Length: 135
Image 1 (cartoon, rainbow, N blue to C red):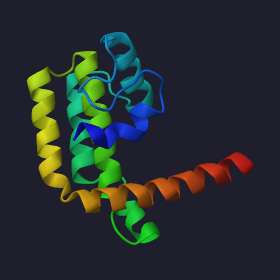
Image 2 (image 1 turned 30 degrees about the horizontal axis):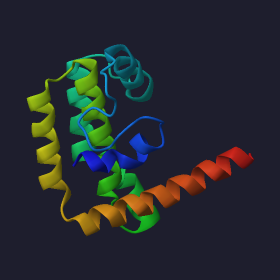
Image 3 (image 1 turned 60 degrees about the horizontal axis):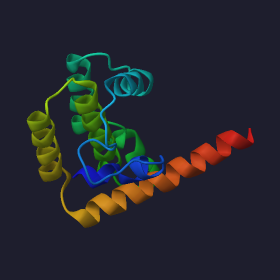
């Protein structure tokens, strides 16, 4: 399940997608800042609400008409990111983080569905970002 965050983790030098926390040393301040800037999360309660939103709806409802199916893997990749950062920020303990990741794994479905959904959403997102940078 941690590997759903692989694209996000691997594009940053020194990060690994193979562990619960992507760096050798946990830096709670960096994790808290990242969660606050990217997700508006500043507490354990905020982390919980964000994970609930990603698990129940995320962006997949609005993207379904665009790519032909709901990209569940995209939302769950971000679910993994928020879980990992929440652990690093001290908003959840290690056992709780692994439980959340296990639940996400059971919820997502098969690996092929995950890969297809993630790739479709990534293609759309990449095109959208490219179009914005030309404006």
